[in-house]
Length: 293
Image (cartoon, rainbow, N blue to C red; front, side, top):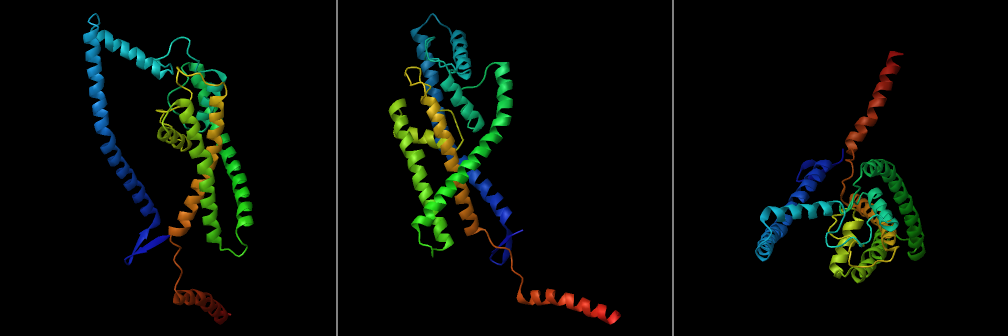
């Protein structure tokens, strides 16, 4: 196991990674709690005030009746029905939306805003995911290899032949980062902000959360019942997700490889004296055998 020499003490590289990973999680939990807890409390208070005002304006309703109605709305939302729409709203299970949902299943994004409500649909989803997730991983792996081959040709065509390997890797990562960022993280949010009427920051947030397969579900394209989308809008979004995932997977793989080569300590090299001692052992054994003969 590779070890890192720190102030005369050998530290396990695996132990450092585990410690750093959990420290990163602890820092993230602390920051999220500081940023979001107060806003959550304020939203709860505002909601309770809105309920009180609603009951005051409509005295014919009582508290239990309103709570029952709120539960009905929540159940409808959990089943993928937008409460703000009506019976004429577009279906969540037309072909374009179903294609988009299938893409979120095999890519493990799982927004959570839509899921099968029938037993047969849930059973099919399980087996579909069992077969689709490995297939999607193989597809993304092959697509990433094709992209890396193309970038390798670009690298040899741009950089001189005498360039060092580290220089070529840095150039490859930088060019791949810039090109992919423009194609998958900068240009698509412009379209989303125009179609969905989001701010550019919200659209960029949605793009990154989607391509990183986090998929919170707070922003999802093509779900506003007040808008009329073209029939292939969500299907095109699914294609963008597939190619964006291939780019992001290859990029993260390249960055991890560069970081590992840069910071991971090399295995300890035996001292010259140790090498001579190890080399001398076979000779001693052979002399002993000759003496016995």
